[in-house]
Image (cartoon, rainbow, N blue to C red):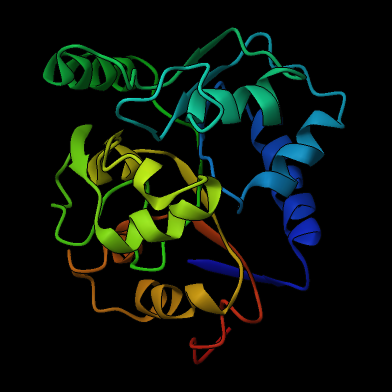
Length: 236
């Protein structure tokens, strides 16, 4: 793992943007994308740039079950507002949160990932160490699956909703095996609330109790984090 400490999210976004440009120049064609507050500044750097994504493919990590693509809390909507409106891709894939048969949707999405291996995967990390919506206890061999969200994740995401009762309790998510298949992973982490997860992710042990610790098994992971998020890590 390579750790890059930054002072602000803006600085982190700029560094990730430079990594993206390097990967595109090297021939990257498929970008794995994440939602949430952590990658926002990265997306701002991208939308302000002259990069052209019209020949690229994007695949997103996850989507809430029960929300339509035009719901303003869906991850479809998030991506449209923060990236796709300014930088359309050749094709952008996201799980269908309204799929009538979740098992068929899982199979469909795994097939998409098999056909479009990710060159650069963007990640955040949850306070409980989840990546994507892979909650503690998820097998490292997991592929796309239906997830029952833990209460801590529901509470953390409730800040985006009017009431905690409005937060979906399930999601469709890439599995840990899908995530680790990416050639390069860039993970953002900001704030003291992420410190325990980052410490476990970096220093181990590697355990399914902390899904992010699986990243120790990957050859090319770049962590972009601020001082608070790295406060539990002994060596930086």
